[in-house]
Length: 282
Image 1: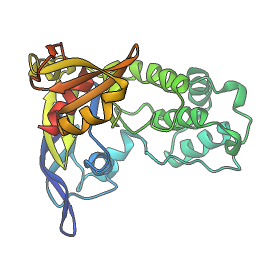
Image 2 (image 1 turned 30 degrees about the horizontal axis):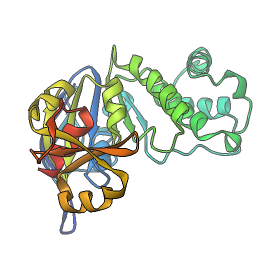
Image 3 (image 1 turned 45 degrees about the vertical axis):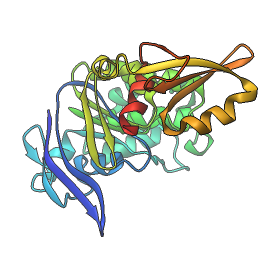
Image 4 (image 1 turned 30 degrees about the vertical axis):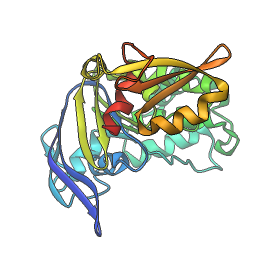
């Protein structure tokens, strides 16, 4: 499990994290927030790559400052900007990472990971020829070498096309059965598909922690929808400003969801995206 208490990180006068307190158990946990919310800072502290300014963080009882070596032995990490040595093949790269992790006789594990993530056919291909989806699958494979108890995945689907994004989510869904998986993302749909619990991080602060259904219930009765013709959409959005949550094309017009009652609108059950946007705008 992972515990943080009043975890704070500053960069000069900027507070990237503000007294973040979380408890994260086995399963896939979503860390959701807009770009610049502090998600990568949080992940890098847990990965022992960045020291907190104040507060504490523990991974299975080990302090991220004092106990970096034992934490790294139980950790798998896929950073947002993942890059492998381009002249190595996929299989060679996994053997290289296995050597860095001091894994003995890793061949069978590497072959199993190549099979699990659909990389057998391209395992002899140089990494420089991999597509974005192949590279992300290689990234998660290297993170799983050594069967880590904790897996940190930072913005894994942001640069993928829709088909690869769905495939990557499917891979992640089964990984939380016997380990702690933290998925850091700004994409609500990633969290909706695979996370049982989530925290919303905004401007360095935890604004919510619980299940997706609890977040949606928080704004039950507060989300309204109405339709306008396409010719009126720009004026309507300008008038409503930050109250607008989402818009969707509907026939020749646009359905608009807003936070709070407006004339001519009817209440609707909030989606997870509605609730998330309502939270960070309220």
